[in-house]
Image 1 (cartoon, rainbow over the protein chains, first blue to last red):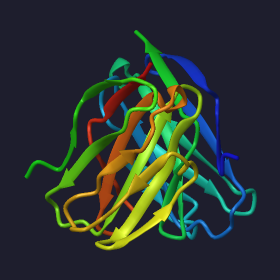
Image 2: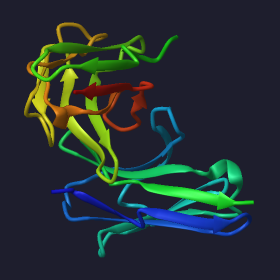
Image 3: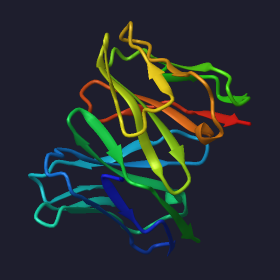
Length: 110
Length: 111
């Protein structure tokens, strides 16, 4: 059973638009929530991360929104660019383990 | 500083064969993990280690063994390969179990 559920499975956004990917979790012991970006043929790379005592974190065009009471968090990509086309994974850390969501394949149309 | 190095990059095995996927990191990271990536399933944790001599099971450990005799190396052993183990395998390391650095992966096909 997947401990972190991610949606949508795939997403197509026009250049300049906002891309939004959502994740939900059940385990309240999770204490760290990163997002990873993966290009074809490469390993995932850390993009941005948040701790549960913070409701939002922004780094450039990338923002994580975190709702502790709903046990949900999301990634927003502002002004999406073709170079952002990749697979995105949310993850959660608990008991010294990092578990991942199912991934979202994002395509930005020029 | 090579980061996380995985070998081989590609491998084809016959059902029942055994092999070891190698993983080495030169960043002196205590935490290391093995994941498998399958379409629609994301990254699933196979085994992980919090330091030399210490390993534990993840979400999908069956059919795989690991050992951690040094900080640098964390090999993954397939004892008797099955077609269900066809996947892309990633090794990752971290100093604190937070920001993991991933290797470039091993694409394994079991026929």
